[in-house]
Image (cartoon, rainbow over all chains, first blue to last red; front, side):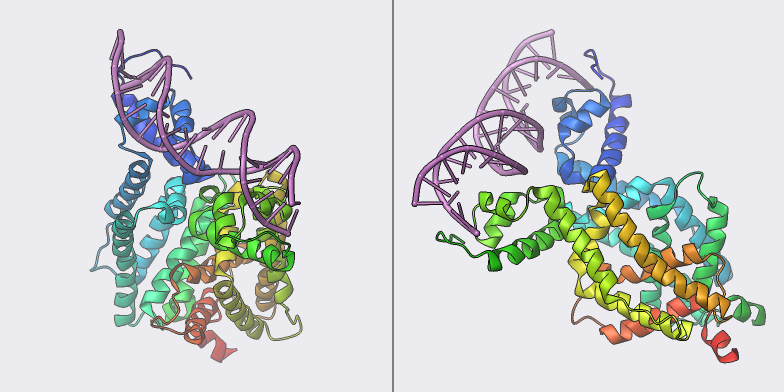
Length: 202
Length: 202
DNA sequence: GTCTATAGGCCGATAGAC
DNA sequence: GTCTATCGGCCTATAGAC
């Protein structure tokens, strides 16, 4: 891992973030030392402080950029059929979560290690994402294609259900991603009262 | 917090566990020091080692006893209507999770801080609990009152959905526990294809 | 069972050379 | 931008007195 002296910010910068994300997700923020990150990157510990003012800022940057990436990646079409929008959301959320499982895990586990101000900023971003799904559900109710007791709870319940895929999914397992998407779409449709029967009948 | 010398194992033993559970859940296992636990209990750090051989064993004991309590608290009636059993499970799982939210949080967040052997033991206990729900779903399918693409995934999805309540529930919030149970029961029934329409038609 | 004291070690962060 | 060296501090766990 030793490296000769020299400037390689273009490489090291992203590498520090990628390494920190992976290690934080695997062992937890508090359990990972700056020395450990540095060793995995291939620099000495002091060099990390050229890329982050401190460890807390490194965690916050990882969480914030993840939430911004997530929000930027989701594009809804408010004019489309709510059931089609739900289908797109389910597939998107599962796919994005599996593609960024370390960041997803971090975003759930390490909120408690943020300062109150940093926590509030991440929570606000999460709220915007939840609102994206809640809008679909409310539009579906208004269109009469979904039956939901409480749109807010249904939103939280569905996101928890979908994100749970990251807890057990393993590449090369029994089911591929497309099949998993199909199965979860069936669960999601049923949960919001758009089960196959109701769908055929509309 | 200072305490005069003396033996009070009956008090201190449970207090160490309760304190460790609360602090681990709030800050994370790695972020909590033995000194911190000791201070909250009201003893010196060295005294903790009369109750646990080391910090890792303390974490494992908390997780294992939680899983055993959970399994012991759930009693199914295999002869009853699968939809009634599902209803009981949903209410039980939400209620137990909210009553033991620190332990539930620990059981999800700190598995990675267990040794491989300890992890395997907790995973086995969790598997037994998942099997309890999966049995209900399979019985429901066999009885023709549930329609499910994949019972294993439906089990994992539902547990994730129900456990998610612990992420946002606050005492004295907009909804009381009974109402939350009703709402989640509706979501759960729909997800397994036992939505109101199908139910009336059976 | 609890205390005090301490061993041996790793921590985050900074200073100054190159 | 990265290195080496280091400060001051906190860590887990143990030893021995009471």
